[in-house]
Length: 457
Image 1 (cartoon, rainbow, N blue to C red):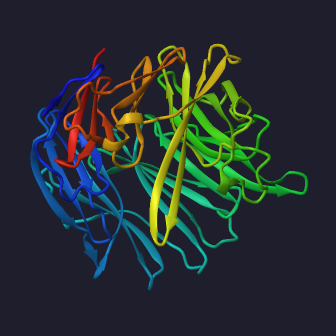
Image 2: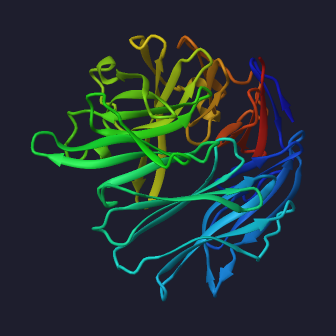
């Protein structure tokens, strides 16, 4: 099935996904892509489709393996060096040991029961802390195994990261001690570069009589070859930070972007109300965390009559002219009589012109389905698609916003004649290149299906 568009065309899979519950595309090669869905504590579905025509090659259920009679916990599944790896963990109450495992999934979706132990730690205190994460390096050529733990709730936290190469060979292991216990510090946004260096953010929770509760936000880099830790605090005269993202650009720099809360919010409830005051960015040299550029925008002063509550940072993009686009969206969950609905609302799009640090702008983008509301089903969510010179925000209800390098926003239809007419864009998406985007869609007639969007240059 094909649909014509002003800026895009689409191919919709001929195969319906009956079990397509919260799908996730995990990897793509020249001929096919892989996706998982319908995750439970015991199993998940894995499938493969052709990249060209989106025809299903296989779909099967995978049962999570059992070790010593206990089902492991799903942690992640990665497509790494043309292999699919299932990452799991298990806690042994008798030995008080956490163990992380790897099982390979074949190209046909069959799970090998032969597991590899990737990480293991024993914590004897009752109130201990443990979490483990798996991700890929910036070039996707190595796997990052990142564990945070503490022997008790009063001891200083530790993080351990391991770098695993092709063939599951461990290249590097390092333990880093934190300055506070985990109830006073949060570590997030762990990134691994091509030289085995680790980068992350630290939120240290503090309190005093003058300002009440506040946060000290720090960027940290561990340089593996030098065995040296670098730190750089985010100093913007604001200290009630909400969301923070960290990412690389193509100039050996780190981009740190985030939003912060209004001082008018309750001192004890500003993280819950998420009354956003503004957004910020910092650009850092990856070698020593030297600050290259920074900026912030007070969004609240643009809308003095409105409360910008429940705003979440969703994404940050750097365009080829150096401009940064920071997107924050209203998100809320409302529950009544046991039924919960996700509500999505306006987007605050802030554009920082890095070359001119005083030149910033912000706009609130509202998706109003208008006359198409009757045919628009589901949550009014958006999918961001980033190219070198613009960002597109794709909505269901046949709508898109385009933001160019100068910050100019254009609203237009996504499809002139969508097929089927009640086509709804779901939250799953995977950019294949600068012109192609894999997504999932739903219509009353055709149900859940994968689709591929082509954008014109």
